[in-house]
Length: 116
Image (tube, rainbow, N blue to C red; front, side):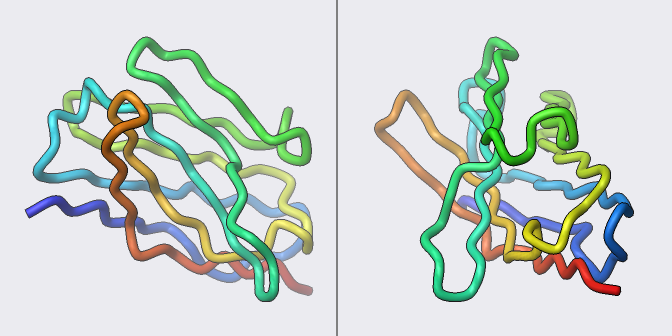
């Protein structure tokens, strides 16, 4: 019943941009902290960006000033605008919904490839 569906991944050249979307169904979206995580081959999943129900944001140091997380509660959707992409940004990006650190939901991921 709960669905988080990511979209917007693809192949981009270094320096390019992508905008990821995560559409949520089956949750009271406005109550959740939303986050974007990524996982590269052989690496652990890491937090890229998060946005609380109140709009506070957090970013991994590696993406500060390049990525922007936002949310549209009316559309139950969170976004990750990724600019100036670097090869090290290549990963599967996952959407996460977190209710008071008690309930967690994950999307299936969308692949971002950064290559010349």
